[in-house]
Length: 107
Image 1 (cartoon, helix red, strand yellow):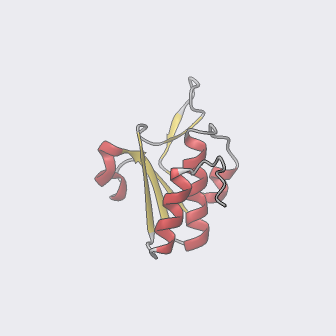
Image 2 (cartoon, one colour):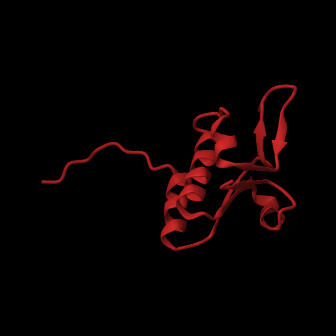
């Protein structure tokens, strides 16, 4: 007998898991924001160009928004030693080239 259950699959975590299984060394998470911001929504908000996993984990990010992207990027970097990038769709090429977005590194 089959039984249904409610479930939610987070696209950011699923993407990170897929890229890891493909043995990729980079993860690119694209969104409608140009970078991860420290102090998002405040008058002191500033984009984070590059951060380590530990630096990002010391901060709070909005659950259901940037929080899952940051956590997925951190897990990918921890598990693979690769790099993760977060930024806007329009800037995809520039993000990978290091000219836009946020780069997440191991240390």
